[in-house]
Image (cartoon, rainbow, N blue to C red; front, side, top):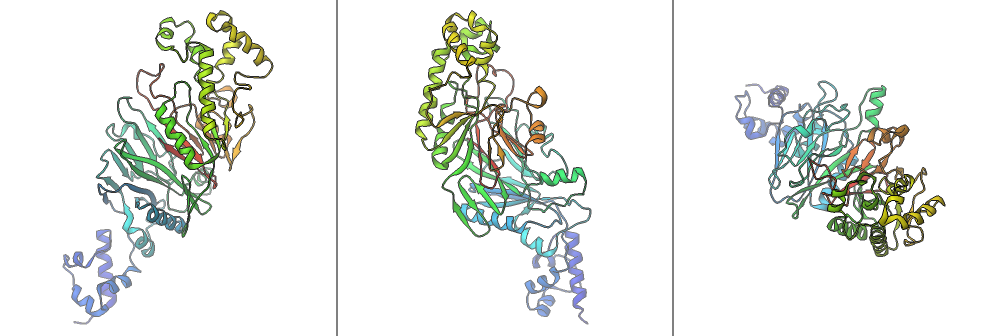
Length: 500
């Protein structure tokens, strides 16, 4: 029998195309073929040499596959890629370096092609194949899934409808060229639920239209870190973003061939404090985080609840009797607790510059004075009269009471760190409307805000969570999306959410 090398390669490639993958020698033997694997090895010298030659002509199409991470895997990095796309090899190599340094495993969600019938070339497929799957399962956390749901690369919000997917899933990760994150509704007696999209390895390939330019703007070279947490008995997520050839995670900087610890980070934004309703455990973890990361600036939102003068509670006799206590029954008591806590907090971190962002709860005192309610408020009338004069003179309740390393940001002035706007609380929107991600995305290239108590990544706007107790006097009914979370700004201008 005459031997035709090209005929052998063509037959092998056809079988691979039908199977939607490269066939191993054992798999090839299961087919009724004209040429045996023994014949092939005698011609090429080895099976691997044959596959290497045939590989140059193989186009691998996306196919459904599942990869299971074992129970003892404590760190997993999940990103995504569009079938047939060119990839950012520097980012890919940086992820491999990150995983090697942190003893983490890498998974790549294999998404559909942006362009019809576009498939990986053999070299790219060989590079990515060990990590590719359309679904990842986690033996250690069965309430966590990572899956490619064929979400179009041009879909504005890749998390759309995931809150309805399953109430049993606590963590949902989907493949997307955008990196979004949101807390899903949950009952306070259950664990929080969260959904996020990965970011991608793929290079942008959008149309030259307004929509295409917007997609390109929000295209993120990114990934999601899953880190096992014994206290919560689940994977806790953290977003990773690659920019300017650097990937930062906490206070460590990664590149293709280097790992370098940072002495400090530019800024840290804390979840809303709401003293004296703080969650002591969350606040203690935050203080340890400040010690570890040594931020130059720490931004504070809603430093006090001001329950004693809250306009929402005027005239609520039963509510006030049930909820006001030794720390908040009068404005003077509440002020002393807030002042002493802030000073103790800032004393512990004397080298850090603390900045208080003008926030809606901080304005409760102004509303109380502006409406004249303090005149009717017997237990607070005297301090109210004194504060009325101070506020008329442009001062506030904390003037000359706080440490030197804590200051109020002036209203309507920018405070920008590494290209990220940090001066907005999140309550104010466009032309007097309420705040929201659409308003901030249309106004700033990048910003971090608070206010909602629910962390979120939505295009260029990032929301921190809260450091208050998750159940307070005004959210005891219904479901919640509140969560303890801070954020940090890195030197490459990217923002990382830190769930506590």
